[in-house]
Length: 324
Image (tube, rainbow, N blue to C red):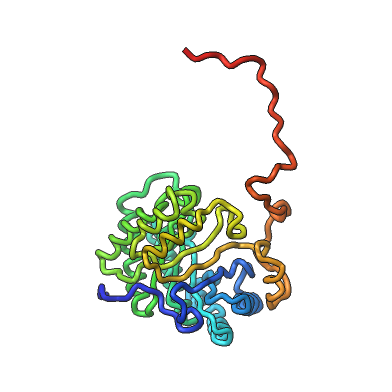
Protein backbone atom coordinates (compact mmCIF):
# COMPACT_ATOMS: atom_id res chain seq x y z
CA UNK A 1 0.00 0.00 0.00
CA UNK A 2 1.38 3.42 -0.87
CA UNK A 3 1.29 6.40 1.48
CA UNK A 4 0.29 8.73 -1.38
CA UNK A 5 -3.31 7.49 -1.20
CA UNK A 6 -5.71 10.45 -0.97
CA UNK A 7 -7.64 9.98 2.30
CA UNK A 8 -10.53 12.27 1.35
CA UNK A 9 -13.78 10.48 0.49
CA UNK A 10 -14.62 10.64 -3.23
CA UNK A 11 -18.23 11.04 -4.31
CA UNK A 12 -19.82 10.69 -7.73
CA UNK A 13 -23.34 12.02 -7.29
CA UNK A 14 -24.80 14.99 -5.37
CA UNK A 15 -22.07 15.04 -2.72
CA UNK A 16 -19.39 15.50 -5.38
CA UNK A 17 -20.16 19.20 -5.84
CA UNK A 18 -20.13 20.13 -2.13
CA UNK A 19 -17.11 20.77 0.07
CA UNK A 20 -19.14 19.61 3.07
CA UNK A 21 -21.91 17.31 1.82
CA UNK A 22 -24.94 17.03 4.06
CA UNK A 23 -25.88 13.47 4.96
CA UNK A 24 -28.49 11.66 6.99
CA UNK A 25 -28.39 8.29 8.73
CA UNK A 26 -30.85 5.75 7.35
CA UNK A 27 -31.96 5.07 10.93
CA UNK A 28 -33.87 8.33 10.85
CA UNK A 29 -36.23 6.78 8.30
CA UNK A 30 -36.15 3.00 8.67
CA UNK A 31 -34.96 0.20 10.96
CA UNK A 32 -33.89 -2.40 8.38
CA UNK A 33 -32.64 -2.55 4.79
CA UNK A 34 -35.37 -4.51 3.06
CA UNK A 35 -36.16 -3.44 -0.51
CA UNK A 36 -39.14 -1.42 0.74
CA UNK A 37 -37.09 0.29 3.44
CA UNK A 38 -34.18 0.97 1.11
CA UNK A 39 -36.46 2.69 -1.38
CA UNK A 40 -38.24 4.68 1.34
CA UNK A 41 -35.02 5.87 3.00
CA UNK A 42 -33.14 6.80 -0.17
CA UNK A 43 -36.06 8.58 -1.80
CA UNK A 44 -36.96 10.45 1.40
CA UNK A 45 -33.34 11.55 1.87
CA UNK A 46 -33.13 12.83 -1.68
CA UNK A 47 -36.42 14.70 -1.50
CA UNK A 48 -35.39 16.31 1.77
CA UNK A 49 -32.32 17.72 0.00
CA UNK A 50 -29.55 15.61 1.53
CA UNK A 51 -26.44 14.85 -0.52
CA UNK A 52 -25.83 11.39 0.90
CA UNK A 53 -27.31 8.67 3.07
CA UNK A 54 -25.43 6.57 5.61
CA UNK A 55 -26.46 2.92 5.29
CA UNK A 56 -25.75 0.43 8.09
CA UNK A 57 -24.34 -2.82 6.75
CA UNK A 58 -27.29 -5.18 6.16
CA UNK A 59 -27.66 -7.83 8.84
CA UNK A 60 -26.26 -10.86 7.06
CA UNK A 61 -22.94 -12.65 6.87
CA UNK A 62 -20.36 -13.58 4.27
CA UNK A 63 -21.31 -13.18 0.64
CA UNK A 64 -24.91 -12.47 1.67
CA UNK A 65 -23.86 -9.31 3.54
CA UNK A 66 -21.78 -8.13 0.61
CA UNK A 67 -24.64 -8.51 -1.84
CA UNK A 68 -27.76 -7.99 0.31
CA UNK A 69 -29.79 -5.55 -1.71
CA UNK A 70 -26.69 -4.05 -3.30
CA UNK A 71 -28.02 -3.99 -6.87
CA UNK A 72 -31.29 -2.34 -5.84
CA UNK A 73 -29.48 0.06 -3.52
CA UNK A 74 -27.12 1.18 -6.25
CA UNK A 75 -29.99 1.62 -8.70
CA UNK A 76 -31.95 3.68 -6.19
CA UNK A 77 -28.91 5.85 -5.47
CA UNK A 78 -28.37 6.40 -9.20
CA UNK A 79 -32.02 7.28 -9.72
CA UNK A 80 -32.12 9.67 -6.75
CA UNK A 81 -28.77 11.26 -7.53
CA UNK A 82 -27.42 11.01 -3.97
CA UNK A 83 -24.32 9.31 -2.62
CA UNK A 84 -23.94 6.78 0.18
CA UNK A 85 -21.52 5.67 2.86
CA UNK A 86 -21.64 2.46 4.89
CA UNK A 87 -21.40 2.04 8.65
CA UNK A 88 -21.30 -0.74 11.22
CA UNK A 89 -20.40 -1.52 14.81
CA UNK A 90 -18.72 -4.80 15.67
CA UNK A 91 -20.30 -6.97 18.35
CA UNK A 92 -19.05 -9.42 20.96
CA UNK A 93 -19.28 -12.27 18.44
CA UNK A 94 -17.32 -10.27 15.83
CA UNK A 95 -14.80 -8.58 18.13
CA UNK A 96 -11.28 -8.05 16.80
CA UNK A 97 -10.02 -6.88 20.21
CA UNK A 98 -9.61 -10.50 21.20
CA UNK A 99 -7.15 -13.35 21.36
CA UNK A 100 -9.83 -15.78 20.19
CA UNK A 101 -8.99 -16.57 16.55
CA UNK A 102 -12.55 -17.65 15.65
CA UNK A 103 -14.16 -14.47 16.99
CA UNK A 104 -11.47 -12.33 15.37
CA UNK A 105 -11.96 -14.08 12.03
CA UNK A 106 -15.68 -13.34 12.13
CA UNK A 107 -14.95 -9.71 12.90
CA UNK A 108 -12.45 -9.41 10.09
CA UNK A 109 -14.93 -10.97 7.68
CA UNK A 110 -17.65 -8.58 8.82
CA UNK A 111 -15.39 -5.63 8.04
CA UNK A 112 -14.49 -7.10 4.65
CA UNK A 113 -18.19 -7.64 3.96
CA UNK A 114 -18.78 -3.95 4.66
CA UNK A 115 -16.03 -2.99 2.22
CA UNK A 116 -17.49 -5.29 -0.44
CA UNK A 117 -21.02 -3.93 0.09
CA UNK A 118 -19.73 -0.35 -0.14
CA UNK A 119 -17.90 -1.13 -3.35
CA UNK A 120 -20.98 -2.76 -4.90
CA UNK A 121 -23.20 0.27 -4.22
CA UNK A 122 -20.59 2.78 -5.37
CA UNK A 123 -19.67 4.03 -1.89
CA UNK A 124 -16.12 4.83 -0.82
CA UNK A 125 -16.37 5.00 2.96
CA UNK A 126 -16.95 2.41 5.69
CA UNK A 127 -16.98 3.87 9.19
CA UNK A 128 -18.22 3.32 12.70
CA UNK A 129 -16.98 1.21 15.60
CA UNK A 130 -14.64 -0.78 13.39
CA UNK A 131 -11.87 -1.30 15.93
CA UNK A 132 -13.58 -3.54 18.50
CA UNK A 133 -16.91 -4.67 19.84
CA UNK A 134 -19.11 -1.80 20.93
CA UNK A 135 -19.00 -2.78 24.57
CA UNK A 136 -17.43 -1.83 27.86
CA UNK A 137 -14.79 -4.39 28.73
CA UNK A 138 -14.35 -5.62 32.31
CA UNK A 139 -10.56 -5.69 31.90
CA UNK A 140 -7.86 -3.57 30.23
CA UNK A 141 -6.83 -4.39 26.68
CA UNK A 142 -3.91 -6.83 26.63
CA UNK A 143 -0.87 -6.50 24.39
CA UNK A 144 -1.97 -9.56 22.44
CA UNK A 145 -5.44 -8.20 21.71
CA UNK A 146 -4.04 -4.78 20.79
CA UNK A 147 -1.64 -6.44 18.36
CA UNK A 148 -4.55 -8.38 16.90
CA UNK A 149 -6.82 -5.43 16.17
CA UNK A 150 -3.91 -3.52 14.64
CA UNK A 151 -3.11 -6.50 12.42
CA UNK A 152 -6.75 -7.05 11.42
CA UNK A 153 -7.38 -3.41 10.56
CA UNK A 154 -4.14 -3.25 8.60
CA UNK A 155 -5.31 -6.15 6.44
CA UNK A 156 -8.82 -4.72 6.10
CA UNK A 157 -7.39 -1.33 5.11
CA UNK A 158 -5.27 -3.02 2.44
CA UNK A 159 -8.36 -4.73 0.98
CA UNK A 160 -10.28 -1.45 1.18
CA UNK A 161 -7.47 0.36 -0.60
CA UNK A 162 -7.85 -2.00 -3.55
CA UNK A 163 -11.57 -1.12 -3.68
CA UNK A 164 -10.85 2.64 -3.25
CA UNK A 165 -12.69 2.58 0.07
CA UNK A 166 -11.66 4.58 3.15
CA UNK A 167 -12.01 3.08 6.63
CA UNK A 168 -13.29 5.32 9.43
CA UNK A 169 -12.53 4.87 13.14
CA UNK A 170 -15.32 6.33 15.28
CA UNK A 171 -14.58 6.68 18.96
CA UNK A 172 -17.51 6.48 21.35
CA UNK A 173 -18.23 7.42 24.94
CA UNK A 174 -16.97 5.55 27.99
CA UNK A 175 -20.35 3.93 28.64
CA UNK A 176 -20.28 2.15 25.28
CA UNK A 177 -16.55 1.37 25.01
CA UNK A 178 -13.43 1.83 27.10
CA UNK A 179 -10.87 1.52 24.31
CA UNK A 180 -11.05 4.72 22.25
CA UNK A 181 -12.94 7.61 23.85
CA UNK A 182 -11.32 10.79 22.50
CA UNK A 183 -10.06 12.20 19.22
CA UNK A 184 -6.52 12.32 20.62
CA UNK A 185 -6.56 8.61 21.49
CA UNK A 186 -8.02 7.74 18.09
CA UNK A 187 -5.47 9.86 16.24
CA UNK A 188 -2.65 8.06 18.07
CA UNK A 189 -4.16 4.71 17.09
CA UNK A 190 -4.48 5.76 13.44
CA UNK A 191 -0.85 6.90 13.52
CA UNK A 192 0.12 3.33 14.43
CA UNK A 193 -1.94 2.03 11.53
CA UNK A 194 -0.28 4.49 9.17
CA UNK A 195 3.12 3.29 10.32
CA UNK A 196 1.99 -0.11 9.07
CA UNK A 197 1.08 1.38 5.67
CA UNK A 198 -2.63 1.95 6.18
CA UNK A 199 -2.93 5.39 4.60
CA UNK A 200 -6.68 5.15 3.92
CA UNK A 201 -7.87 5.24 7.54
CA UNK A 202 -9.79 8.33 8.69
CA UNK A 203 -10.89 9.69 12.04
CA UNK A 204 -14.64 9.83 12.55
CA UNK A 205 -16.06 12.26 15.15
CA UNK A 206 -19.59 11.93 16.51
CA UNK A 207 -20.62 15.10 18.36
CA UNK A 208 -22.87 13.11 20.70
CA UNK A 209 -19.94 11.05 21.98
CA UNK A 210 -17.53 13.98 21.89
CA UNK A 211 -19.93 15.97 24.05
CA UNK A 212 -19.48 13.39 26.79
CA UNK A 213 -15.73 12.83 26.53
CA UNK A 214 -14.04 15.97 25.20
CA UNK A 215 -13.48 19.27 27.01
CA UNK A 216 -15.18 20.87 24.02
CA UNK A 217 -16.08 20.05 20.42
CA UNK A 218 -13.37 22.38 19.13
CA UNK A 219 -10.71 20.41 21.01
CA UNK A 220 -11.87 17.23 19.29
CA UNK A 221 -11.50 18.85 15.87
CA UNK A 222 -8.04 20.19 16.72
CA UNK A 223 -6.86 16.84 18.10
CA UNK A 224 -8.13 15.03 15.01
CA UNK A 225 -6.23 17.41 12.74
CA UNK A 226 -5.91 16.36 9.13
CA UNK A 227 -7.04 12.83 9.97
CA UNK A 228 -10.62 14.02 10.37
CA UNK A 229 -12.61 12.61 7.46
CA UNK A 230 -16.19 12.15 8.62
CA UNK A 231 -18.48 13.85 11.11
CA UNK A 232 -21.67 12.67 12.75
CA UNK A 233 -23.79 15.67 13.68
CA UNK A 234 -25.89 14.71 16.68
CA UNK A 235 -27.40 16.64 19.56
CA UNK A 236 -26.51 15.85 23.18
CA UNK A 237 -29.77 13.89 23.54
CA UNK A 238 -29.87 12.55 19.93
CA UNK A 239 -32.88 14.79 19.25
CA UNK A 240 -33.39 17.87 17.10
CA UNK A 241 -30.30 19.99 16.59
CA UNK A 242 -30.19 23.13 18.67
CA UNK A 243 -32.38 21.79 21.48
CA UNK A 244 -29.55 20.32 23.55
CA UNK A 245 -26.19 21.41 24.93
CA UNK A 246 -23.81 20.99 21.97
CA UNK A 247 -21.64 24.06 21.30
CA UNK A 248 -22.41 24.27 17.58
CA UNK A 249 -20.75 27.67 17.13
CA UNK A 250 -17.51 26.41 18.65
CA UNK A 251 -17.62 23.28 16.52
CA UNK A 252 -18.13 25.03 13.20
CA UNK A 253 -15.57 27.72 13.93
CA UNK A 254 -13.03 24.95 14.59
CA UNK A 255 -14.05 23.07 11.44
CA UNK A 256 -13.65 26.21 9.33
CA UNK A 257 -10.26 26.94 10.88
CA UNK A 258 -9.10 23.37 10.19
CA UNK A 259 -10.18 23.51 6.55
CA UNK A 260 -12.32 20.43 6.99
CA UNK A 261 -13.66 19.14 3.68
CA UNK A 262 -15.89 16.23 4.42
CA UNK A 263 -19.44 15.11 5.12
CA UNK A 264 -21.67 16.43 7.89
CA UNK A 265 -24.10 13.59 8.54
CA UNK A 266 -27.04 13.91 10.89
CA UNK A 267 -27.37 10.79 13.00
CA UNK A 268 -30.45 9.80 14.92
CA UNK A 269 -32.40 6.57 15.20
CA UNK A 270 -36.02 7.66 15.20
CA UNK A 271 -38.31 9.55 12.86
CA UNK A 272 -39.76 11.34 15.90
CA UNK A 273 -37.14 14.07 15.44
CA UNK A 274 -38.29 14.82 11.87
CA UNK A 275 -40.55 17.84 11.46
CA UNK A 276 -44.08 17.14 10.16
CA UNK A 277 -43.22 18.95 6.91
CA UNK A 278 -40.25 16.65 6.33
CA UNK A 279 -42.10 13.50 7.30
CA UNK A 280 -44.66 14.07 4.54
CA UNK A 281 -41.99 13.66 1.88
CA UNK A 282 -41.19 10.12 2.97
CA UNK A 283 -42.13 7.67 0.27
CA UNK A 284 -43.79 5.44 2.84
CA UNK A 285 -45.99 8.31 3.98
CA UNK A 286 -45.13 8.17 7.67
CA UNK A 287 -42.55 7.53 10.33
CA UNK A 288 -40.74 4.22 10.35
CA UNK A 289 -37.77 4.72 12.64
CA UNK A 290 -36.67 2.64 15.57
CA UNK A 291 -39.56 1.63 17.83
CA UNK A 292 -39.13 3.21 21.25
CA UNK A 293 -41.00 2.90 24.54
CA UNK A 294 -44.05 5.12 24.78
CA UNK A 295 -42.40 7.57 27.17
CA UNK A 296 -39.84 8.47 24.48
CA UNK A 297 -42.56 10.30 22.58
CA UNK A 298 -42.99 12.86 25.34
CA UNK A 299 -42.10 16.29 23.89
CA UNK A 300 -38.77 17.66 25.07
CA UNK A 301 -38.76 20.88 27.05
CA UNK A 302 -36.09 23.52 26.74
CA UNK A 303 -33.51 23.67 29.50
CA UNK A 304 -35.33 26.60 31.10
CA UNK A 305 -38.75 24.96 31.19
CA UNK A 306 -40.42 24.21 34.50
CA UNK A 307 -40.92 20.54 35.27
CA UNK A 308 -44.56 19.46 35.58
CA UNK A 309 -43.42 17.35 38.52
CA UNK A 310 -41.14 19.63 40.58
CA UNK A 311 -39.00 18.07 43.25
CA UNK A 312 -40.21 18.95 46.73
CA UNK A 313 -37.33 19.33 49.19
CA UNK A 314 -38.30 19.15 52.87
CA UNK A 315 -36.91 21.90 55.13
CA UNK A 316 -33.73 21.18 57.03
CA UNK A 317 -34.30 20.30 60.68
CA UNK A 318 -31.95 23.03 61.84
CA UNK A 319 -28.81 24.98 60.92
CA UNK A 320 -25.98 23.13 59.28
CA UNK A 321 -23.13 22.28 61.65
CA UNK A 322 -20.03 24.43 61.41
CA UNK A 323 -17.03 22.44 60.26
CA UNK A 324 -13.95 22.92 62.45
